[in-house]
Length: 367
Image (cartoon, rainbow, N blue to C red; front, side, top):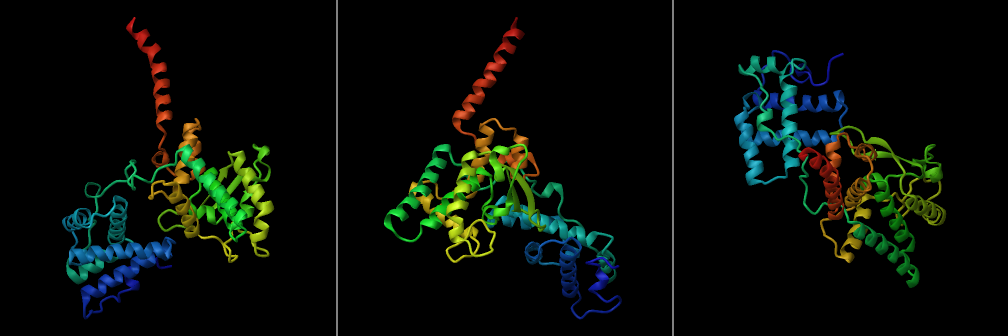
């Protein structure tokens, strides 16, 4: 069976082309798209983004891939950094796209080197190297305001959500059920360390028993089905151990008293809109933003701050970082450390503990 992306599938051997350079380039892009989607099974939206990045480099370089060089790539990087001032994570994505495209063109399995040698007397080379691309740093590269909530801020957020329910009930207007739903949703996102997309896609059947924590009943574990995917792959799944009894109580009360009133017949989603459709991340973000602004918190804060808070608070409570890493589904512990923004009080306590441990050692060494 012929592999996806082989040059012979897109260019007829020995046939002269009217606009050879453009035709070969388009065949390369088409073959690479097929190799990514058919051979590697990557998502279409991800593949479209990588192709777009390669076309941008092609436009900036002003020449064809078999004439690309590391110098041309460096010029493009300079433009992205100094002129367009793109975020490091965005630049890294562009670099990865070009690197993978060059890997594809220079691979012996796809025949593009021989094709270019025959038609143009030269061939593509890899233009992305360790010395001219950025590595994934452990330091946080996002906006400084993207931080965990303090415990005071977290409680204020929950209190504001509860107050909204009371306000709707006292006024006799519609909105009490959605407000109650959102109050529980915010607690669930924090208590299980979920991303917004993971939280809104929960079904009632995603909760199940944990034999090692029978006190939580049917809510001892949470199956997350829509975790963040890895570069074009399918959503990752993980199981999260339940740790907060107050969160279980909130979910139980919601399922008994509110969920049946909002649920369309036969549906299993945990959160529904007033129209009876599954809640969207935008609706969660809008509610979070409304409460955030009412409380005067940093406007850059988003629902993702609840996930940051989950990680930080567990670390402050002395939970093993490796366990926390598994809970939130991070492949590398360095990624989990990015989420950790311990409070000043906790940092001072750690400092005092370290000093108390070191003092006897230093006194013994001085004798």
